[in-house]
Length: 145
Image 1 (cartoon, helix red, strand yellow):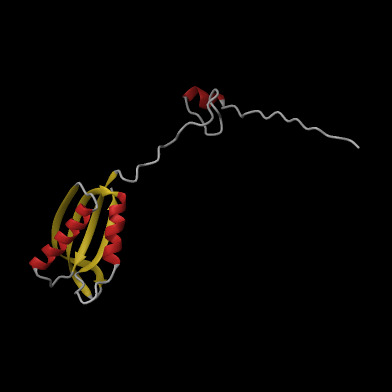
Image 2 (tube, rainbow, N blue to C red):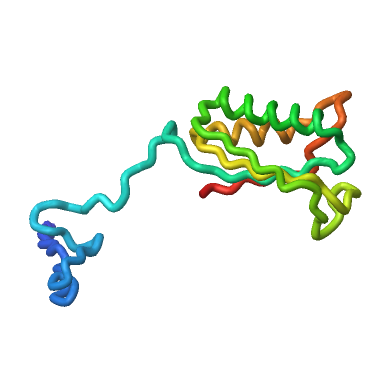
């Protein structure tokens, strides 16, 4: 009965001369005794981020009702830890296509700085139907700046 012993010497791949001369390091080529360099740090979930939101409201709604909706949005963001909240009223604008039967809508642009989870909470709140209340917000969209 024969016993086989395998001893393999694994050599680490060396960085090419061209990459080494420019100071770049590949993820596969270890530098000295260090294994891999850190490429990017993980972002803190509680760190505030800047967002821009667009809200389209029904065109026939009174100014006081629209102002109350904007105040509700402001309070939702402030409860979530928003540090900045800026509202721009763009007025009555014609939509590119009908949204829920309306050719026009009243547009608001909101710039806010808040923790990441706050935007998700506001989106979840806006997505829930309100029983017995009139739907004022036709559509909304959030963008991360």
